Image (cartoon, rainbow, N blue to C red):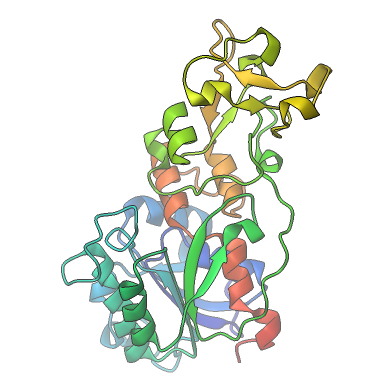
Length: 331
């Protein structure tokens, strides 16, 4: 990508691996300047590998100020867009629920507010997770807008509910685009047991197992037909997940509704000497769930790939929110 003199100036705190830039490109929004405020060295490596000097990496959000901006760039170029997703560890229902109190990672949200007040961009967009209403109210009061709730499943094969605060005029959400989990899997014979993946978070790299998958609905797995057995031949005793019915194409028909051949219902069983009965999603597949280009993050280890993808934007959602067609441009 090349910068264009007729594009917009973008400030991206908590930039991650530059998912906002991907969304801008998907929205056909020309970019003149893109400044990243990110301290994670792995995310910065991915940004550098994909964009080179297109992304200006300016370090810690807490150290960026108007004075520094004057020193690094012309003050005659105000920011058109402030876009980012502040840390969620202390507000997420999956976290410790410390809230937005000073000293927590999530209190970095107030750095976003500082940048908004200091630089006065024409538009802003903030993403965060589901949280207590009290924390939602703090964010809404600080930004002066109410959040928009969007499930990424409208755009991709992932159930991922996030909240977005923005002053960009919005259109209605499109209907579900019909992308299902099986569509994004590599052609290695594994199949999905559901149409939409569980949410892929930053801890996906820690691995998964059948118990957490079926009982806690987390860390999406896919399955091998070689790990299936005909219901009539299987011992249905044991854990609940051993009694679940599967179909090799990812559907789960009832026992009475399916019969014969590949439509015959089956159950998951351990097999020896064959391919593993289940696996996690591959980094490439998780990129697809987030709407990223293939192998966009393959410049770091798989552990770091999973972390940054899980922490990042769902690109088609951000592209929708940017509302280029609604705004008719950002001039």
